[in-house]
Image (tube, rainbow, N blue to C red; front, top):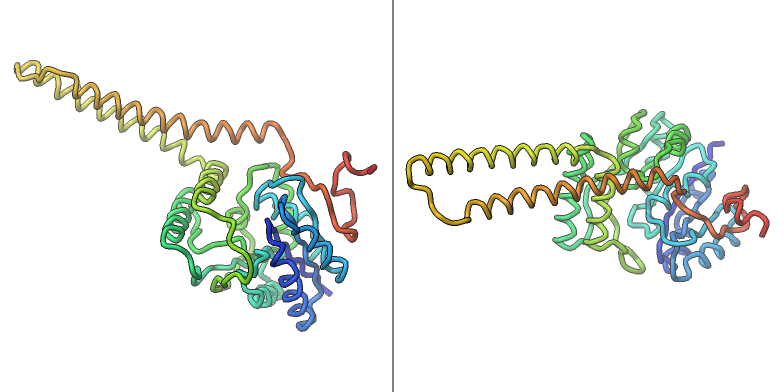
Length: 319
């Protein structure tokens, strides 16, 4: 019998853990699907991991781990993938904004031969205008950068075991999970869903954190911003040539205007291009620096009793 694993990253979600475990367990058992739930507490400051331990003690199919600090959602997803043993793996939010019933549709498509099932948002739910605009801009930029349609995409998806193994074997440490599934290829199907309202708590994503997430993913997944530096250099050179010709013509005609307005504007424009270019290059240098150091994506400090293997690392194995 095939096993379905569900990865559920969580950050300060103590109010949602018990309800999510109950809803998913009951739904999968009713449909006679063999399953395991993997909760990853991403360095939560509340009682998230304590709640994970409680539901794990009540149901051996539920496992969990706690990071030593907050490493981010990408790290939480990949830690969950590492702990899974299922033939198919679903990644979804632990606040149930990703509808549980869609998991059944994904499972059916996988049984029909799909190796990747992408969850596509048909409605984003209740969000502020600013958040919707920023999210829409983010996906348009990412679609242009990676040359794949990322509109309405999400981390809500099912992956066949072979796809999971491919992702886990990637040597890079700066990852963008939702784009990697597009990049990996394989037999892909899609299902649409409407984002549900949270029953407990509030979203941990702010406009600033979304912007930071967008910049990190853009520079880790595409080299197009570096090519834009060259484009800005060409524009600055052309603009300089035009101003130089204009100034020379006016000088020869005896109509040149005294003062430094043109010089100041030229310095400001070229200086702005230079600073922006240095910023873009700096982001790439930072990504290279992080990759060269070779530090792990995450550190697991605690696990539930039913997690087997030395996932805590050598530093914890004898304690």
